[in-house]
Image (cartoon, rainbow over all chains, first blue to last red; front, side, top):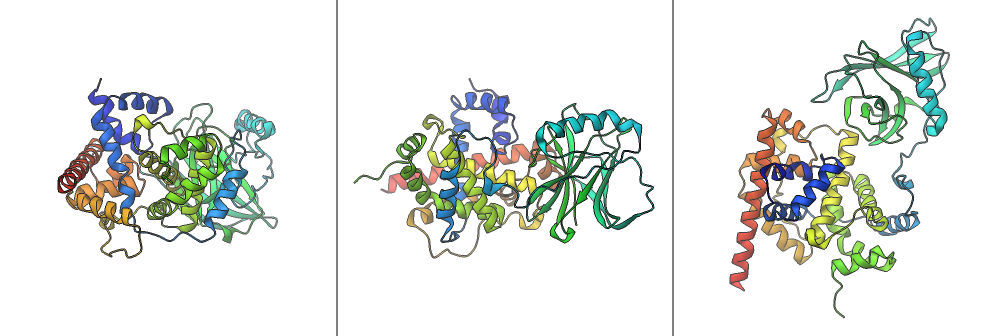
Amino acid sequence: MMTNMDCDRLVDYLNGTLSADEIQQFEQHLKTCTECQEMIEVTGELPYLADPVEPPADMKVRILSNVFEEIPEQNNPPAALKPTMSPIPLHKKKSKANIWKPLIAAVLLVSLLGNGYAFQQLSDQDDALETAIKSFELQPNETFSGTATAALIEEEGLLNLVVQADQLAELDASQVYQVWLIKDGQPIPAGAFSPNPNGEGASYYQLEENTEEWDTIAITLEPETGNETPEGEIVLSSEI
Amino acid sequence: MEKSTDTSLYLRVSKQDKAALEQLYDRYEKILFSFLYKMLEDRGLAEEALQEVFIKIWRGKGVYDESKGKFTSWLFRMAQNTAIDLIRKRKKPSVPIEEAAQMVSNDKPVDQQMEWSEKQEQIQTAVQHLSAEQQKMINLFYFKGHTHEAIAEMCDIPLGTVKSRIRLALKKLKTSLHGMQERGAYDD
């Protein structure tokens, strides 16, 4: 039976903003709603608006060999689609404030469980050996109200990326703000944090790559810690 | 020999028939690559997205059900969703509003298959029946992968208005296309 409420979800369905449950519900509705069916069929014509672009001659071989190499049971993204750069190991820094201890214990546990990354909170910076090289104001997306700054800091000849954010809303237990360094659309994780009760959070990440390599820094709100590729919306970002 | 239908190829693919996947690939490589290029504006990303689409098909991650519509609608929707994921992950700067309505290129493409050319002409005509505002909505929503929230913000209109404009635009497209197809049938 068609209801307006179900039909209203068509646009969200096409825009990929429904949850798995909502998709299932909408597809149930779709079975009986001719109008929604027809409108979806129309979107199947829109790609023909594209002007023809000649694919690279060797693309077929590359793609099919990657497709057939995939193990069907594997849930990870295909090798060719993973970030081209290796994840950077994090060197942990000594904690300076006790309020972070429970959180650090939690994130280190997550790390030890196998995600390969550890997260570090930085509450203050008073190290005389630190020299700020460059800092950026991150711009919030349309709906996000928090603010953040990132700074590249040289410390004893090593480069560190420090991110400090405030006015952050409280998160669900499993959620985390994840920092990413991006080059040509390829992100690597570069620290993560959760807000304290005052809505402030910070992360500290040691870089082993040349910073010229990166064009963008972004922070996403991830549904869980330890994601190697972003799943959540970008909430703050800046060009580097 | 009769040309295999998309559905019969798809069924063979679901039984891990590599030759069937290759046939589907050959059939849709160019339109998918062109479509993904239009969305992503980057050949490398378009290839990445195309590969992901075929991996999804091969692994059976997306399941096509003939009762839910045409194979191409399903295939293109999967491609579009894959591109949207890439767009949202990289947070590409928003397309300037004044360019957003340019869905239809004025250049007449020279090299393309007959079927594509016919379909392009039909859909272009249907799109030109939309108001500039509706064209802008469809372009931002469909090709640029913006969320409704982002479109509402960019165009400074309420969220509900964005959704209803997109819906109305799709409805109008549907009516125009059906009208053309029916007239085509009478002409035959």
